[in-house]
Structure formats: structure tokens, C-alpha cells
Amino acid sequence: MFIGHFGLSFAAKKLAPKVSLGTLFIATQFVDLLWPFLLIFNIEKVAIVPGYTETNAFEFLFYPYTHSLLMNLVWGIVAGLIYWFIKRDKRGSVIVGLCVFSHWFLDVIVHVADLPLTPFSDYKVGLGLWNHLAATLVIETTLFLIGTAIYISCTKAKNKTGKWGLWLLVVLLLAVNFGNAFGSTPSNSIMTLFVSSVIASVLIISLSYWVDKNREVKG
Image (cartoon, rainbow, N blue to C red; front, side, top):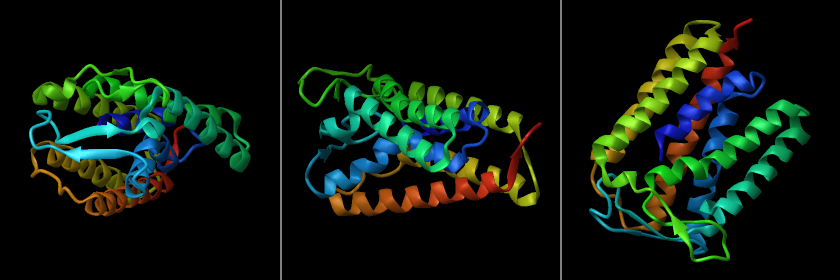
């Protein structure tokens, strides 16, 4: 799942108004941000197989440290504790931790049976929505738009930047999502995948911090 995670980030702002949207983006995408670094060091493995699913060409061969249920729980606890030590915001730290943990549950909807439960087990799960392109786009886009609507309902723009910056972010995420679905097959080069992932992540997260800085929580 891609854009659905960002939808959850938007929605989580209502539950944790003190937490920046950028931090919520990092939380829901935490394991996907970590994953390219483990690929580079050959700790986790992926293959690019054109047509592997209708939605993307990634065959996830080995990624228990970022995408197993147990490690998502561990990373959620770690992220929540780090946020608490920095901000001393108990509510915010809980929401940040839950956002990290949520990643596995949203992924299990779309992935084929490649998501491990623990790093110590070969048992893997996945409902396989990625095998149905239209359904994937409808469900993910719906989740994203619902989350965006919740964010808009609980925040307001301080200025034109806060207003138009938000729509720029929304359009960018939608464009990337549909580009992933209908674009060309990614390069087989792990380095190319790493660089493109890092650049896209830095751009999206930086924009989300900038947008949230120019908006405020209603009430």
C-alpha cells in the first residue's frame, strides 16, 4: 500500500493535534523509509519482476526486519518512545507508535502472501489486492481522500501557503500513486531504487512539514 498510508497520516492529525503532519507521514511510512537502506546493505532482498502483480513489479523476497508483524510492533514502540523523549507528549507518542504499527495491517490488504509474522518464521500472509488494479486504486484513493477530508476538517490555513500548499501535496501524492500504477517497470538496479526512494521521501515529507507549519488546528 502507498497512498493509503498517507491517508491515515492525515486522519491521525485529529487524534494528535500537536504532532506535525510531517512526523505522522514519517510514522506511517517508517518501515518503508528504512527498507531501502536494508536493501543497499543486502540485509533484505527484492526482485523486479514485470507483471508480478497487476499493480507493481516488486517481488519481496526477504524483508522480515521491516515488514514482519512483530518488527512493526517493535518499531512502533521505538518510534513512540523516541517521540516521547523529544516532545514529552504522551498522547502524541502513542499515536506515532500506532501509526508505525498500522503499516503492516494496511499492507496485508494489498500484498500477496509475502508478509511474515516474525523474523523467525516462514509463515507469510497477504490478501493480494495488488492482483486487482482497479480495486487497489479505488480502495487506496478512498482511504486517502477520507484521511485528507479529516485533516481539512480539523485544521485551517494560516495563509495562502497553508491553503495551496496542501492541495499541492494532495495532487503530488495522487500523481505519484497513479504513476506507480501505470508507469514503466522500475529499474533492476537496487542503487537506482534506493536513490529514487530517498529523493521522493525527502520531497514528500519536507512538503508535509511545510504545509502543516502554515496551518493550525481549529479550536
